[in-house]
Image 1 (cartoon, one colour):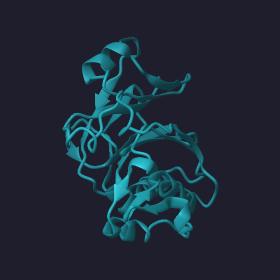
Image 2: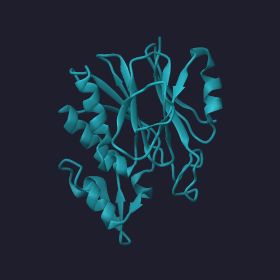
Image 3: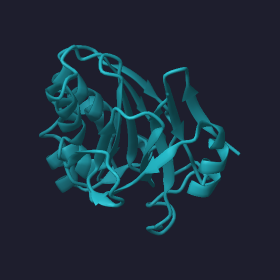
Length: 221
């Protein structure tokens, strides 16, 4: 059973796969007494403060409450976890190509900055997602994404072969984060391709499966 976890005395960051249902994750972290929060993801640019209402429509949520695990569900999209060292807050973001086009990561960071994180002391984790060699798109998607990469050279985020475009969402995401912060971000990448790795659900590989990989970030008390 593959389990990817980053943990210290302040936070837990967890990226799950096929082997990790919500019940299994709850069991794994039973001693930490975590309360899991979900949102209804719609590929939007909506960022909310985590609350008691389940399935609120949004694609990013944040909190300063301890033991509140912010869940993100993905099957090729990027699960992105953020920790603000200044305010001791966390955020969890869902970003596929539509989320990247909608600049969901920028809007999450700006929400945190506007509500107290003015020193921009952030750490990011980007979990397993579809990698460039597997992310084949048509020209219309490439055109949309080429408008939101903040000056990257085309070859830095896109390759072209067999009349198809292959996009590196991670590179565009990093450009968006750097543009928002005005500095080189502290990002941990897990370069795991969900389409080719059988330990993870993949929307493209598994005939548009509705099953999802669950990931979360949580402040510890």
